[in-house]
Amino acid sequence: MLVTHSVDEAALLGSRIIVLSPRPGTVVLDERSELPRAEHPRTEPAFAPRREQILAAVRGEAHLNKFTFR
Image (cartoon, rainbow, N blue to C red):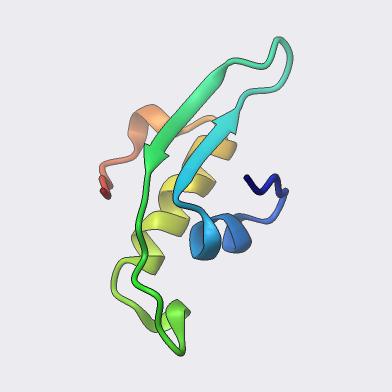
């Protein structure tokens, strides 16, 4: 398990990404994710959509997000 406040770190290293809302701390995003391990993972096609999905959840826009990754 890895707990981080870095969206990039979560997108790059996480196999399951959970985003909590501010108080009272409910789950707003809970997704399994397998980004291929690559020499330059930020250039992987799956990285940008994953990062955007996490950012949308952090901003409270998870319901607006159309990205899905598995």
